[in-house]
Length: 139
Picture 1 (cartoon, rainbow, N blue to C red):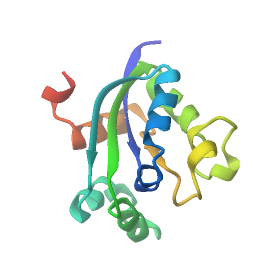
Picture 2 (picture 1 turned 180 degrees about the vertical axis):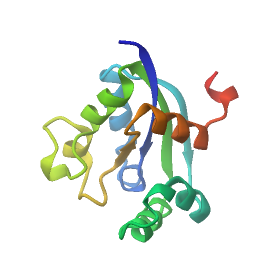
Picture 3 (picture 1 turned 45 degrees about the vertical axis):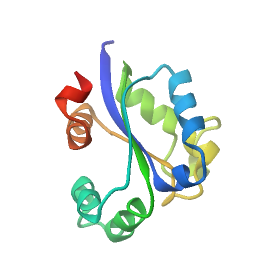
Picture 4 (picture 1 turned 90 degrees about the vertical axis):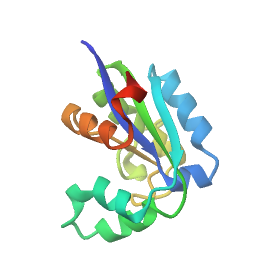
């Protein structure tokens, strides 16, 4: 296996609840190296652009509203098999179905307010990393 980069967001619900530190610690304990980290408040335009892939889905409007309601933390992460491992550490989208010890089982409130986003493929990771980080920031 080779070292890969992936992208993640600690969502507004987890930041507001003071869970960011615990989530970051869990990611590091799971072998992720944090290459880049920013706290920011997404604008409507940024959230719409980032979630453009979901534009035709019924939850798009509420997702954009949720992601702009407070600060988020965007992250560039690295480790072996990063995309797959992050998905495992995050747990199922619905926290009721997430495995014990996963981020969503520990911190998420609902399927809509599920505290973390992670890229679902290497191609998506590259696109999402480029949305928030410049090449100079990640080297």
